[in-house]
Image: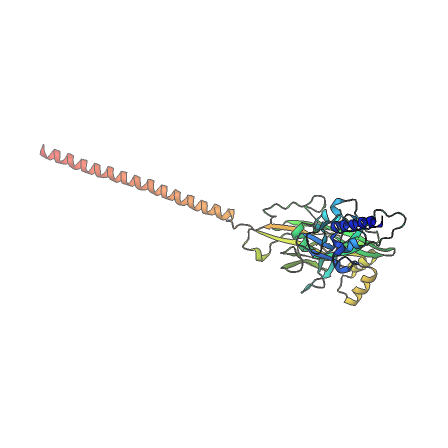
Length: 401
């Protein structure tokens, strides 16, 4: 009896080893943070997790998923036994809706810009993060299996995601502290045709005429009544990336361009202003000039916004930082899409053209008159010669008779 049982046990062990190569693999051990490899690709993120530590903890590839989404097949990984060591692979694209499908987190943060306008500009950075979790399907009230969780993240400049995944740059999330704690407000920018701010601005591919007035609006949503939207600085650049191209300030604090008209700023949960379109000199050899609008925006407590508008003076950095801790959020830069303007072709003024036409008509008239007068003179001369010769002939005839 005992030999039969031993043989059966040996067969089961051999069968199990044949089904699970991890039993003899060096990575069949306790999990470690280094078991996950993250590749932040150009258009997708790739994750690889050593598979044998998963089996060592009593799980398999079907029991692991992104952010605990075990009911979604697209959030499960794929086991690859052909490589050494075996791995569990996950991948997802870094554009919407792929990021949110498996509950990955996308957070936009701000970093201070560099160069001449470092005090006013900031660079937006996107952090995409999540976790690979395991689940014991047989667990009830208790489980004897340790949960496995591998954290991952990738960091991209926001402009990189815009270029590669066509994510919108018109919206950005901004955190601010209220008396009841922190909350998130979303800022967005829109361009309109007129002062009513009801009709979105349409920009044809051929571009807008120069000196077309554009009405810009920055709006906050999910914002408590205590806070308003304050624009520190709005400027244009020749590149979608705010910090590394030719720029032109529409206004910085109280200083503004003569063609910029301020509407509401720091008074409501929306800020508005307008400006006239122009072209950048560096585009002089192009048929159109393309630029982008950026606004460095804060959320400020309404009474503090009022004091900023009333004083409208340059404050010491220490005073600004002190106020920021209590009444003002960090700066978030929200941007527009491309604004295109026409470069007009040279033309001849209508008045000058009319004068040239009149001159040409006068020359033609004089030429025709001179021609007619010359023809009459020739005819009269011919008649005169004819009469003289005829009279001479008559005189000769009379003399012979």
